Length: 288
Image (cartoon, rainbow, N blue to C red; front, side, top):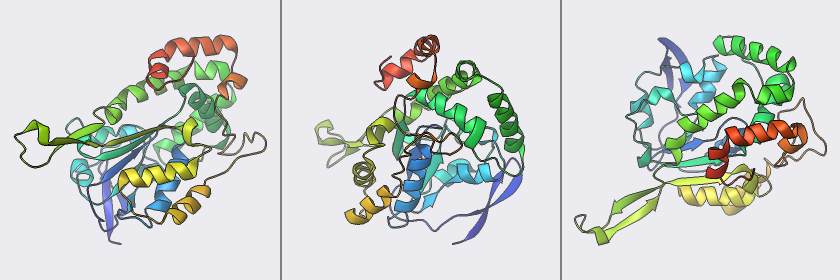
């Protein structure tokens, strides 16, 4: 594995870039607290046996204490336009790609979760369980966030800055699920009847996969055209099957049941969230 560096905000960050694999690169997106850790762990395991190595640059930035949305990654488009990689770990749209990056040309996976559950999970994560890097701007920001979360009622918390954060995040990520198909010319490209559509987006909801991880992993491999032994795929997926018997507020996997916001939030808070998030709830089929 060649040793290289990422040039971020003018500083060199050590990073091991694997040798490229086969085919056009793919991208993995999941907002924070949407099942993103599960998805990225599954991708990391599957890529050990698939045709494309895993490259998780957001994780490397976090470990270095660098704010993902404030990172200026030099030659980012050149890196992400390279073939043969699975670029994972994207919990937000990477601003360092700018507006010129043609994501439509790449297969991408997007995992969504009820944003009301994401807000509740975010509260417990910020207050108790999320790891904090050892240094850097992210360490300082997360320590401030933890202090604020610990001193704030959950109802006040979810209606505050985190609500605006998630609304803005989902608006930024709209480009991920736009244009889910791509026209591929077959035969004479001048004849429209010889064009076919290639599906470029696999969009899934956390609620539909949390108790069916093996089936999801099989679907994922089929979509990304990774020819991996189905028995191995099932085994790797079941590694992620963690279902706490009781709620564990201090743990990353606190609980996994959908709709937990209805137990944690006041009814008046839920009504306010429904109004604020109505367009996003409707887009992904969540009931108010």
